[in-house]
Length: 105
Image (spheres, rainbow, N blue to C red):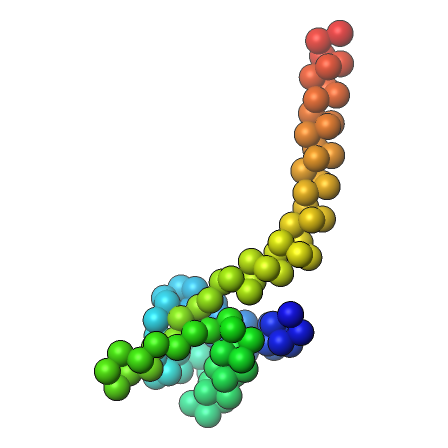
């Protein structure tokens, strides 16, 4: 998880993930076209994202395609966000049920 949080901490890497979310399976050149970064910077950030398993690479002939891997983000959601959200949803359901009970009395 530390590698994932470290990778997500940088705004440039989040931009890369956003670009892959918009259109998955992009080459380095395609990614560079949408970002105001040098090719070397994009490559550096992609290596970190690959190390965190947020980006996976597939070779298609001589083209290296980059794909967003949402599984690590889902793990973060389940572990850190979902459990807190669940309490809020339960509280809203309880409030709704109480309001309905009051309405029926």
